[in-house]
Image (cartoon, rainbow, N blue to C red; front, top):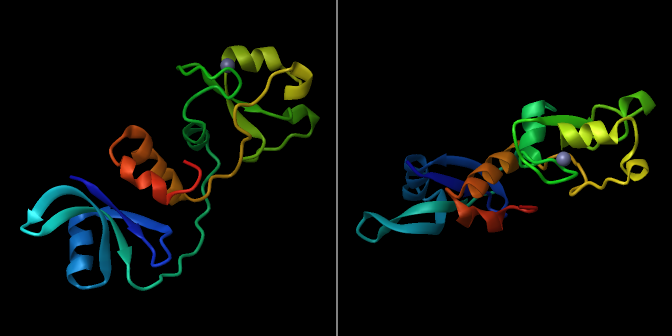
Length: 165
Ligand SMILES: [Zn+2]
């Protein structure tokens, strides 16, 4: 069943919830509808796809683990040097580990085996290979979740509420 993006009172994305929970929040007067998909739940009550809380909620920042899976997801499962996608994706240390490059969001990028081997123990500049996107830390785990829904096409209407998509 369809999911609903919940915005804070400030219009920043807060979380993703079920449509049932979203409807309850609206019926209790805790949230207002921002977008709907045109399908009617009741007469004059379209099914929401984005709602906004009436009162601001403070949320602590949740750290996203630096894992292979998360890096591949950040890089849209494509080689950051040649753009190819496939099963042979590896993780490349932009500044090689042997030369002091660390395991950080900013220093690890997705690369296909061919590009990784070609680059070897060099920096992108030395290898004359350039990154499509400068690797960086994701905004938040929610940003990750929203990006998945937008990219897969299930909730394209969420895109305008999230930066950097
Ligand atoms: Zn490549």
